[in-house]
Image (cartoon, rainbow over all chains, first blue to last red; front, side):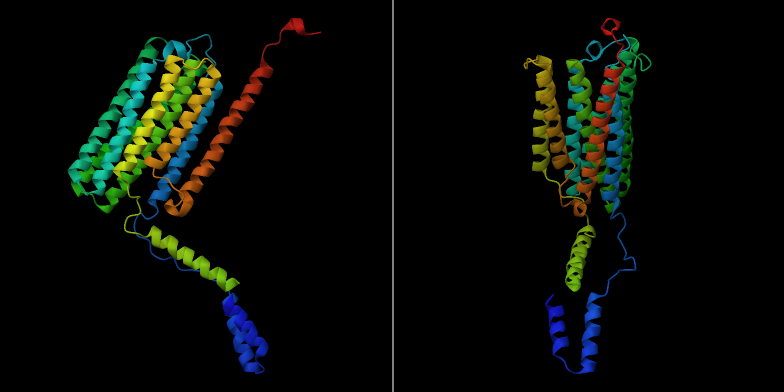
Length: 228
Length: 132
């Protein structure tokens, strides 16, 4: 601003044509648009966190559609069993506890990673995977009980949307478990190198995101189902 | 005017890149952060289960409203303490993506529920005795 104003003053004050041209050139140079045409180098994985976050947000949209479908169809029992006949809140509370515990133990794994402790990182990852396995085990137990009672996905629109929503979440947790075991092996083989830290952080986002989805599931499917 | 705008733009650009090109741009995690997040989550999970299982609130609508508010609060707690989301991470793009997702999510959910509810009401078999 000041340099431009000075240039303007100088332009007005200069009687000499050559100097005037020089000042005008300076002025247009100051106003010329500025582009960076050449791509500057980026270190490996510098945009991974943002990219992974955007993946998680797209996954969030996938779940929002499943929640919407459940919200619309959740009351259509087709004279079949209703949530009150099927859900056992004690089991759901136990499952929620498992997932919540696995969230904090993953946090401990991140803390161990931050202090460069390979074996402690692996140990906490194993504890997290154990809680994740408990969650999947309890969920499968619940599903088998329901199916044995005849409450299969084909029974009613409520059950179709229930199994789709809760099952998709369960599949995500299973994928997370496979990823967790893979990372435990990789950390064991290569140590806590930069690439492994990045992967562990991505899995951390994925795992905590699954816990966020579960908050929606236990609130809107199980607890609200008992209120219907 | 223009030179000024350029100066501020390029310095903002440089700051963004200095941030993005750091050694490790994963946020620094702390034990305190995780413990606070876990403590709050336990409370925000236990209360809705208690409300529904004991039925302390007489009205079902009040219970539903209460557990919805608690769920939203718990989601925010998880975002802040476990997903380490703040306005500064990735120069604000994380938060921007989240806000965009939240808008789409709210439109998809409320839109579906609203439209399908009215469709259902209007498709109800009519009681013939009320017809003229």
